[in-house]
Structure formats: C-alpha cells, structure tokens
Image (tube, rainbow, N blue to C red; front, side, top):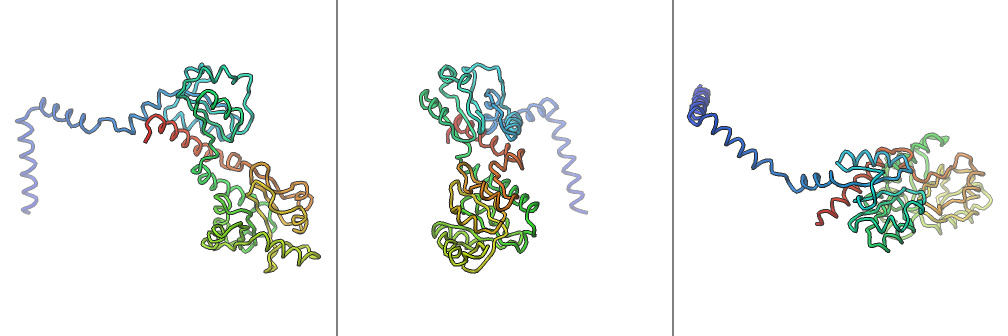
Length: 326
C-alpha cells in the first residue's frame, strides 16, 4: 500500500514539474536529447557514402543477379550507361572472358584512380590492365572468407546429388573425400553428421590430424596405391581395411588418382567439384558409371541467392574498407 501511494505521489509531482516548465521548455529538452542521441555513427556515415557510389555489373552468372540486389539494398547505384570516369567500381563477369573491344585500354585509362575492379575468378586481362593503370583489382574467389562461406552451399549441393544418384542411403555408406581443404573438410563433416563412414585422402600430418579431430578417417595416397596393387584382380577400390567406397568426391584441382586407379573403382559413383583443370578423367569415369559427374561452380547452381549474397557482402566490405581504412 505504501509503495502504491508513493508511486501515485511521484506521478503527481512529475505532472506538477512539467506544468511549471511549460510546453516550450519540454520541446527544447526533447530536441536537445534527440540531437545528442541521433548523431550519425561512423557506420551510418559509411552507409550514406555508399549511396553515392556508382558502379556496373556484367552479369554472366545467376548468383550475380542476387549480388546486384544485395548491393542495391545497401544503397549502391548501378548505371550501365555511366561513363568510366563516373564509376566507383566495376564487377566484371564471374567466369566469362572480358569483352576487350568494349573494355579496352581507353576504358581503364578513364577510370578514377580510386575505382575498384572485381571479378569472380582471376582474369589475366584484368590483372594486366589494372596493374598498368594503377587500379585495385579484387578476385573474389581468392578471398578466404568467401571460400569458407561458399563451402556450405557446395557441401549441400554435393549431398543433394549423392542422395539422388546413390543406390544406397548416405547413412552407413562409405564415402571418400579427396582433399581436406575448406570444401573437403566442410563436406566430410556434414556427411559424417548424416551417418556416413567418411574417409579423407590427405597429404600431410596437419590434414591427417584435422580429419582425426573431425572423426573422419584419414588416408594417404600410398595406402590406396598399395590396396589397389594387392586387390588387382578384384573390382574393388579401398584401403587396407578392404573398404569399398560407395562414392568418391574430388575437391582438388589436379589429378590425384591415376587413370589406372580410377578404372579399378568398379563403377563407384564419382563426383568432381574442383575447379579447372579438375581431378578426374571424366571420359573414363562416365564409362564406369554414367551417374558420375563434374559439378564445378555448385553454389551458383544450387544456392544462387545465398552465393550471390556472399559475393555482395564481400564487395560491400571492400568498398567500405577502401573508403575508411582501419
């Protein structure tokens, strides 16, 4: 009862004070408070500056459509009719070659020195022109952060393909992942979580220990070679434990398994997700199992919205960093 009466008394006191101060004073106090609290932060200042940045995007990949949407939502402006001197950034084709007739030496000479060039994969032409004219060039797929984030849609795309093309469940299957980098490790962990018996072909102790920590069985190439020589007459491809793999997924952009080793797989489903020059001789692989496939660029095909957002986030990060270096 005492607390209630005290609260009522406090409310009456506040009303009395407001009445004495007057409405005009209250408004002045409110405006003063608002001005103090609503001063733009550094982040807001950067966002406002983004709204003034103009660029172009040369779409050759579905994910670029979402990259453009992401950046537009951040306040960047795309103008395909802008002159080179008006551009703050240019996003060149993700994979296709640059049209050198349009984006010639004159184009790069007229760009602002502060302009930034982006492309999905490395372009020798862009590399040369940007170096020649002193323009910063960012190859998005070389960024470690993008590789880590892209590993998720890549793994999900591979798993989706395995689900639809294996003659058995992923649970309790035996799957070999060639390479234990960012993509290989992410895929192995996710397959493991689905109940697969996962093996990783590794090349050094560091990768061996990483696989062990993930409850994935590490294997070295010499173990596979030995197993193949011992089981030469059998249509089996495995390690000394006599494991037959239901699927083999390559993540290394070079040949790790010889054609002879591949021919001894006995028709195992083989999936290559590496970039060029790839890891499997697909002519041989497809003859052994016509469901085997080369699945390069999975994020852009299986999760274009997510992959496009990942690229957009990186571009936004670079442009803001250039505007306000740490």
